[in-house]
Image (tube, rainbow, N blue to C red; front, side, top):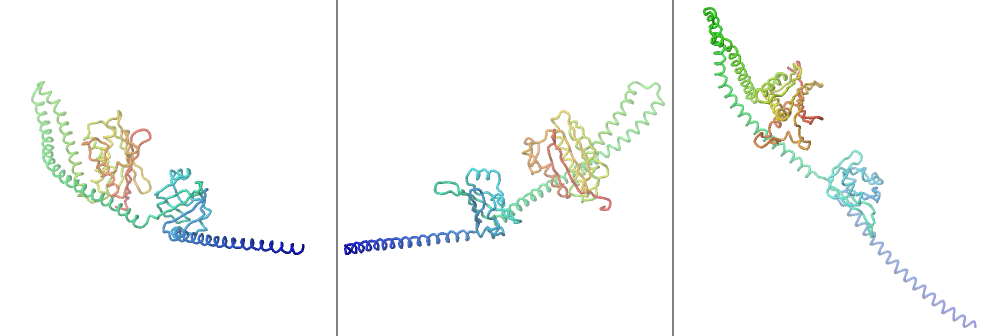
Length: 422
């Protein structure tokens, strides 16, 4: 019996040892496989980490709540920060996205190629950013991945080049326009000179004729009794005829003066000029050159002096007035108010009309060269452009806005010149 039991124990022990050995082999194989997988996982992790750290593009990884959980070395270098300073921060605190992009991300959609500012502490850099949604194998949302490429020196240089090109083009256009206006000024100067000579003769002859008439009238009155009716009619009509002739000559003289002012734009040097007198002359000239009757209230103060070219300022005011006359052409009760106000060391001149105004979308374009709201053939679109550049030339500014009720207001600001600057 004992021998049988001993034999059974030997068989059982042998079987147990065999199972132990089998289990040991299986565990050894699983450990080898696990170590291999762990090595592969470590290698993959190192590979991915190496890629992240080698990227020149900045990278941010966020969880499903938008909280940053990881960033790469490029982010640290370009934003002058450390990973532990940004981890735990919500991405909207750093990345300044517009409302449209935020709405897309809120609906778990990706955004691409948007230019945004990334701000960390006092450092702000502009990046072209792409963002995709992280998902698991069941397509459940895990978070966001932001990848940004800095807008580098080449892009900035390209932008600067475009700005410089635009400025050069504007300068070229201005030079071309200046040369055209200078040529026109020389032509006008010659015409004004030629017209002024015969006008001077007529002036002198009219005054002489007036004196001769008075002497002849007195002699006839003294020697002829009674005076014939037809002669008396001549006596009655002649003063009005003389006054009308003189008034017409005065208008011609005013026009010649205006033409001379216009022609001297590119001849005169800047000096201390009375702004009020220039505005008065511009109003007078503009009123006489238009047929429509417009109520102009010139409320500017007297004795406003600035350092500028009188001819160019005259042209600026004439252009603004002509623009106002055009806007008031279809208004029932046209009115233009000109006001002045001193603010610190500057003078502000407002031209306020109750005209047709302009659409808000077009307001930003009115100072562009060759932009016009008039019909084809009615204008070249250079008047306000010239005004804007004349204001800039004398260290001033020109702006426009629509009035709340009706019409527009053009505001010219120029530096004042006091007696000490003279």
